[in-house]
Length: 160
Image (cartoon, rainbow, N blue to C red; front, side, top):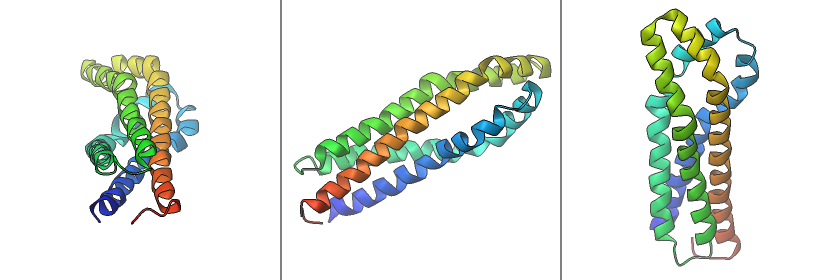
């Protein structure tokens, strides 16, 4: 019973973790048309709760997924669950390597003044956008593998 509940919680958290990346991806074509000053104003104000809510949610999903891997280590779905967990972890790694440094640079630029901020946003926006797309893609693959692991477990008739 514990693996089943743990799997449900893990999938729910991982699905919720798709929200922020999906939103970034859907907004990308519109944001790409913004001039640097408007891009800076929108980006510096719109995404505050993405980090406050989304970041902890994704870390929690990864932690639950890691525990799930341990709980089902003797089951046929272990490999898919492990691969899904690695996908989630890779997503967070990509975010920390590609997006977080841009966020930090933009915060410094905002403190330096409006003209510095506009210049920094213009210089770093491509890396920020690509980083979000890469992190979302890895998270989506991780989620899909976790989900496929559940389906494999059900198809093989393992106890639920």
